[in-house]
Image 1 (cartoon, rainbow, N blue to C red):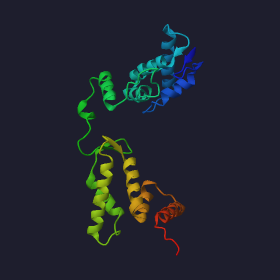
Image 2: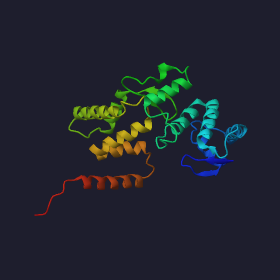
Image 3: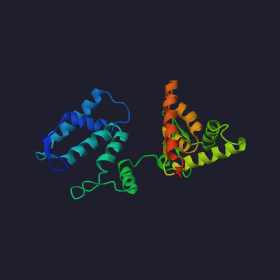
Image 4: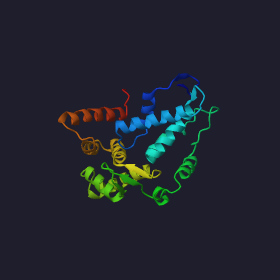
Length: 240
């Protein structure tokens, strides 16, 4: 069976390529046997229909979408974001998702019974997805306490440290104001980004935890990078 790609090229339908494409949509673990069964069903659907040979790749994608929707809605939506969200095919086929409104309209049409109280973005702080998958409210006060420990002693007094932690927490929270869900990894990365700009020792304190340093060499290599970073930022004085 031949496939006509979006760029007009013709190639043989490759099972492994189709399998890889479907696997990229995976969010939850799936056994090889289940994935192979899904691929086989897609191929059988394509073969059973009187499509032209070569078959348009868009029709294959549509068949994959139907199969994934039956398997797992999250897989289905993730594949759709790639398949329907392309803007490089103008003149060849319309892109369904050009804006968030387009995507939400499609999502509501595909899943009219979804719980709308869950997907409406929060007005203030996002929901945090923990490493173990739990979802908890974003607690700014907890972030401030953590930053207070990280920056302890890095000011003239406790009041200055507390104010610095409060300001840092506000900056980090503001970074995520347009996101409904954030991971602990995102928070850690943004925390390190802010600390890197302000305090190398506080950065090392936080980095040693979030990056899970395993040796003194880890500390040394990070400190060496910091030394270079701050040296490059230092004002250059011209020789007179």
